[in-house]
Length: 188
Image 1: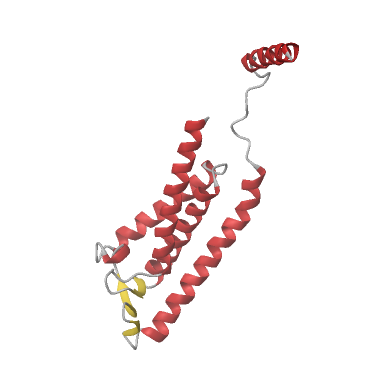
Image 2: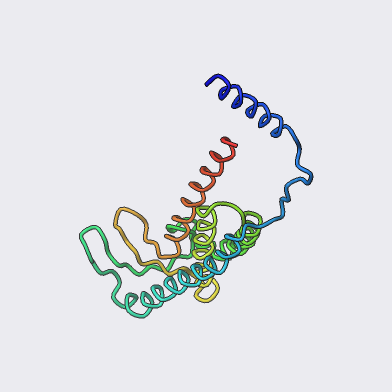
């Protein structure tokens, strides 16, 4: 038994020595994980689907809900047509041009982050896709209507839409993903 233990100590020393050796070539930082390349079409498809859902729901609100105003669905939830010239939840009313410019700039930042963070975790990539879909949905409204169509009314919260939900959920995914990346970096 002692000879077996001595052997394992010897291999442990060799293992420590090998960890001290530097690699012949430094790791390439510009290598993209194959999984992130495969997920790009998935993320773009998700953005397209979410944008289509947002557009369809807003079109329904304009055609069907606008003439009816507010329809109670549950005691705490109504479908209420609202034309929002401000930001999310009606903040900054009548600043449509300002918010259009900010949204275009934000989409540029999101496109850059999609490229720069292409090897990050799924939570971050999903968050970027959700925020991008929401920003595109509300930008479409600002450009073609001059306001954003809101219609989801929980009575205790400002009226919002599917795109606002995408931005909110996407921001939460980003925060969670960045937290996970931070923990992963602390472990390494």
